[in-house]
Length: 216
Ligand code: CTP
Image 1 (tube, rainbow, N blue to C red):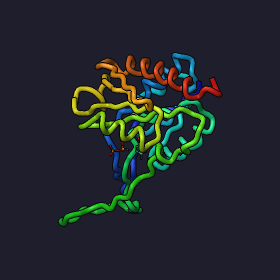
Image 2: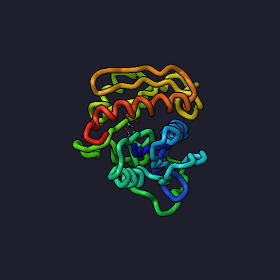
Image 3: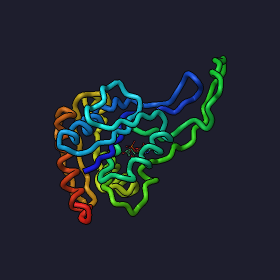
Image 4: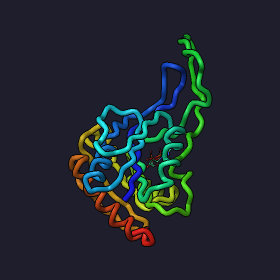
């Protein structure tokens, strides 16, 4: 199968020296890319700025902002079977980017933010590829993950419980729950991101084959 996988954070510039971003390390997305390659799938990895070596065999598309990630995904999904949106894409971006460095003053300062484009929501509703979203949650994990599965029109939603600081973001380990459209859910208990990635790739392929019956 042809996988498009997004990984890492995006950065939204404020001025020439500052940006808004998040703690995503890209480790989960890179592990999924490696697992898919090991299982003989083709991989396009759309990566935000991370400090990780590129998985051998993946086609890497490097991006910085949410708009760049949106454009890269839009292009890559034209020829794919599975999209895995593992990236922690910014929800907001500055309404304008200052051309010069914003100078410090002795008063309060506020930044006007506008919503960034939601990449999953902007995908066509009718399509011939399988879509996996990730839900990063600190509370009410199941409720939020199921809501995102529906509103973001995904085939599968992988929920990360961020309430345990020892796993998930930046860590080498994770624990996830996978929610499918048919209401089914499956927990993968705490393990290395490598092991979780292998299990995810197997599950994604099995479910994608059921949905993409004309292709496989
Ligand atoms: N996502 C996206 N475009 C965005 C933000 C998120 O496509 N601008 C995708 C992520 O890649 C992920 C899914 O949406 O697959 C859920 O992301 P998450 O950060 O958990 O949720 P948000 O939609 O940002 O909602 P909230 O921050 O309110 O939880």
